[in-house]
Length: 304
Image (cartoon, rainbow, N blue to C red; front, side, top):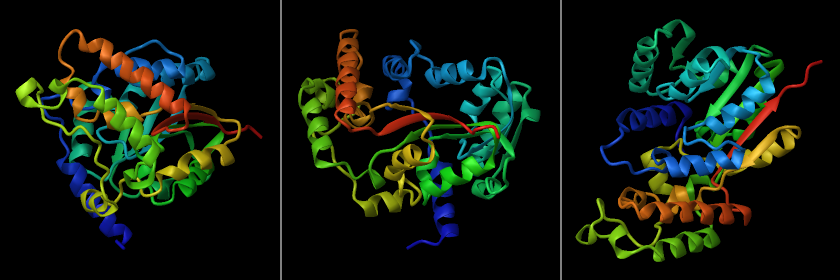
């Protein structure tokens, strides 16, 4: 078992090397996918996060959350968006990848907003131990990297001022991506229905892919990034127990996150738009059956 400092070092090395290639290979780069996810929250928009932003804006009714904290912020693009749309005044931003921090500083500087963000590479959970310090605690694709997700949520509530907000947009699926047999059958069934040209370069695919979804081993996951989803499946139960008044949206993901992983890069023809829409409808049905890899949550800490 890795020590915490060893895990952080290994994870930092991994995220320092992650780059976006020239071929769009992930669902969040496809407007039809983003629009379908936003619609589940209640907004018809192809802009990432718009659904959650609209819900938060409606609750705030013009109020600005002056002091926010985000842990595992990457380059801070999502946090920058919250500042630019007038939701957050300034952020303390924690990120273990030094390369992402430098990218984030450059990003904020390009908008003349460097004074709105303090980037740090130390332990963000330590900052959450200060009671009633923040108006917003924001988790986006980072809470699932925590070893004890329930404790991280408890710390988040502790760090909120009365009336402050906890916003979560996270992977909540099986630990270490150990997909359940039933959801694997859903994923494989969808891939089996796709034309051959989605899987073979000789048939026109931009990248080759297998017909069946291959579940990684726990050892493979730890070797790649020891911080990847060690306790992710505990997030939703913790939200329901600790934040009973929170608004929660189940956002699926078995199809668009895994069944379309890499294959989505091969949706190239105009006629493929209908297939992508079908994929998102299928995902919604699989979500309703109880298989959700992602969820969003907005919680306001009671006043008094």
